[in-house]
Image (cartoon, rainbow, N blue to C red; front, side):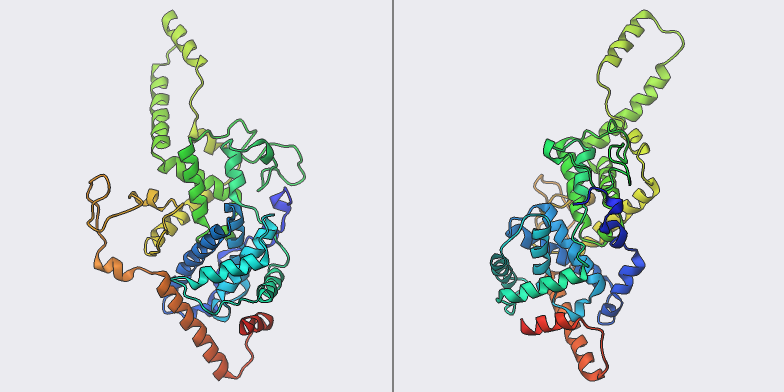
Length: 398
């Protein structure tokens, strides 16, 4: 893998703008009653890839690569003209190879066929022939332009938080500038690395996982996502936030106490205080980053908006490994009576919230209607349609 993000195909060809994403979904919108369904599709298909990846015992990095492949593929293709489920299987298959965690094609087909036959998917037509998945792999790699190198925020997060092991010291995700082999990383000399407790680090990791439920991973470089995850963690993680407040108050108190005249006892006390290891200054850390803080704030706002939108989507086990509960300040499991495990009363969903919620079954129905309407238009128009003919033959054979 290339160690310089700025010289990689990821940065040069696969960091897109919102106009490109909007244009890619323009034809799909013609077959949708509500444009928001596309955002729900992003959440739904990310959950599908994650669940299938866990069935295959993939590491999180492999799952994230499969998600990125899926999103890149649908920059050039339409939901209404393709079968997303065979695309998902191909993305997982190719991601396993790209991340050096290969799965035999027979195992991939067997696991995917079994997984998609279960509820809520209930698919009985997933191809059992290994050659169909191999053919789909060929079309996927062609649409990806053979750019299989994907950078993720995880390594950057581990580097900043001093979680790297001796085997993981290779820099990536823009940590070294173009043409610099042994220079300072983008956050400074390395002396300003954060020392977060394990639960705060896990929260930042979960926030990064959640960003793959939207198009954020296509819009911004991965190191910015890692910095944004840390920024949100410092704000949302209770002990870390309290420490930040203590630092602010102690700094004000120290400025008040400092005066030109100090007794010998005060001097000795101060010297002893300096001998102790000072607590980390989170504000100084973020202020010293060589990144655009306004852009980090913009990404943070987009992540918060994603969580707000995500609240309308309901799926079993949807809260696993997610930071959603932290953002909305609720326990991970809620009882129908409106009382949580600690005995504190919690709001119960109203009938309007239930009616406006979106489920996987509903999205599958929407997807089926989209594909049927598209095929009907193609059959009645008699005009040539820009369809990937090779992909069309694969779907017909399956």
